[in-house]
Image (cartoon, rainbow, N blue to C red):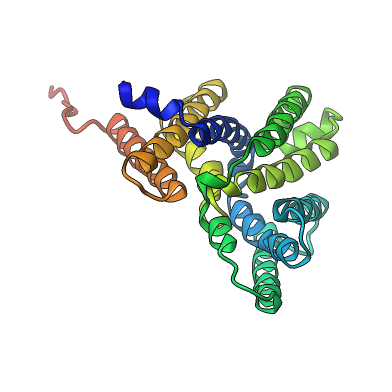
Length: 282
């Protein structure tokens, strides 16, 4: 307990823990509606393609994550635009984004003079790089997203469960779709400093996937997703500080362990090994 109190009193740990709670909650919510649509690959595609924005920011100066967020907004908008198109599938378009963004970023970085140690922190996260201005921006985005979730909730649920029914009911699915795609893209970029481009998809995909193994309703799935996302993030950050481990991989490995435990629990509940069927013979 004394160690936990000491950790909470450290300024950069305060920023990291506060940021991780908001980020985990946001990505947990977005993941609840992204993963059932079979768009989990979107996280990797957007995050890796956003490296292009970071490379441009490093080359031209300014704040690289602002450039990355701009790239993410454009890519998220394109995904929403072609959502109903039969010309190209989501996974193929995301693959194009990933390959094109990463390739362009590497070329730009090769043209940028000087040593670029900050690139490593964007790839794998750096807990020390989180500042109070970052927290303020994340807080504004967090509450804005929650308000939009409140007003878009019914449409989000119906379009995820039954897209045709939402059309019959005349719901404004188009605006909701843009909110989901663009909001998810921006949330992914917001988490780059904590988990890095390589691992940020873990916070979008794994908590919901884990919760889906042990929950039996939408309400319980959302609650358990939030629980897994927030607790996993906090546990990973604390363990990374105590044992001097990289933060992003520590959070990711906690989330993976949670998924494995829930998967085993689901299998046990489905067919308990200590129970046997007894057939009554006549």
